[in-house]
Image (cartoon, rainbow, N blue to C red; front, top):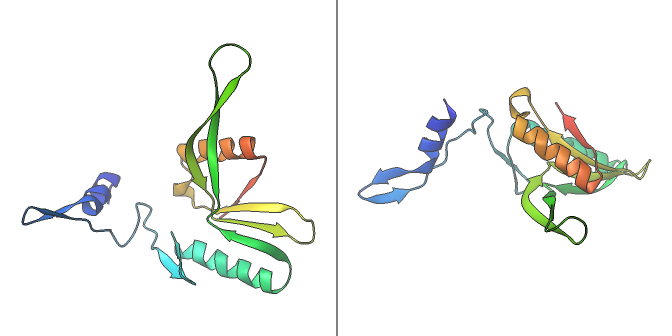
Length: 141
């Protein structure tokens, strides 16, 4: 199914002049959404990684587990050369997980990825988040 077909299927189905929104059972990468502990994950692999991280929390190896943390995508604009600069938030990047490694005290940001989901747009957003927020995004394949 092409991106256009998936969008058309999701976007609208016309019934007696009314617009009814429907969602396909899979996303454009053919991943099935899964709900675990009341949290909706985009794929079965992401849900499985969440369950692995919950075990690490229970074992006391990691803490402060956060699901779908948001990072603002920010750019700096100059009205004139030199200060003052204006910071603009142009969007949000939502990683899959953020947690603290209790052995090293490092904050880890993870994103579950497959080859088709490593788009040029994703790579650009990842670079912006890493540069602006000073984090490294670990890709879980």
